[in-house]
Amino acid sequence: MIRINNLSYTYPDRTLALDGVDLSIEKGEFVALIGKNGCGKTTLVRHLNALLMPTSGSISVFGMDTTDTSNVWNIRQTVGMVFQNPQTQFVGTTLEEDVAFGPENLALPQNEIQERVDRSLREVDLLEYKTYSPKTLSGGQMQRAAIAGILAMEPQCIVLDEVTSMLDPQSRSNVLDTIAQLHQSGKTIIYVTQRIEEILPIADRIISMNNGRIEFVGTPKEYLASVESPIPAVTSLMRKLKAKGFDVNGNVFTVDDALLEITKATQVRDKNKTETSGNG
Image (cartoon, rainbow, N blue to C red):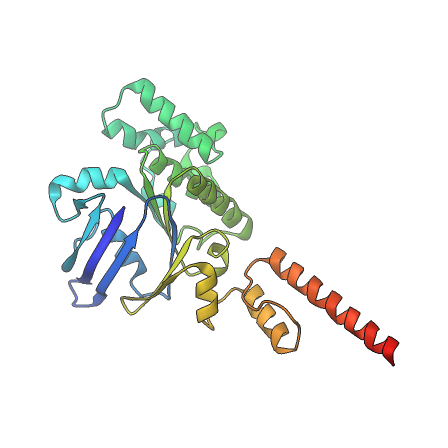
């Protein structure tokens, strides 16, 4: 779906943000892009729908070159982007007006616009709020509203740049549930985050960046097997237990899997103690 070849980008102040990036993203994938602040994540994803143009190298979306200005409108319909602060994306006085803005710019019939608005708001569980001002919503609702605005354009790929960074845990969970459901419906998801723990259970691939370059590409399990940090707190706990002699998998990354591992290890240890005591 997306092919990036030897992409480099230098900002006007001569800061080199991307340095020879090569990457392919398949249709229907859920890709998590991770790395510290300043590593180039946001710069990279802003190239995917032609918000930025390469200093050198190339990007194609379904064969459309992002540097060809005649492709830009089609590319932006194919790759929708949701930013960290949803308020920067709102243009309507009500949620319904805001979500309708994109389809209206496509000059679609009014009945189709209304169908898209209702469907998109229903997908993010905000249909009952369609007459509300976006600014009256909670932080998590605002992010889901921003996602609805992108969904109304019917993109095949959605890029989400640090969309949960300013949310409380419950709002973050709600937004992640929405994103996971969109992926299950067939959308390609590119998710930028520094919160590795929130993305490992649902991503197909992890792409780690550092100093404008890609330093790792692989599955969540491959990522955990190859790094010491950053890792989820539950993985860190399991590794400490393993170091203490517990027979557990030190690379699990969900609480449920960790509980299973600890339960099995405890049962084995208790059984061994009982047998040793009996033999004594």
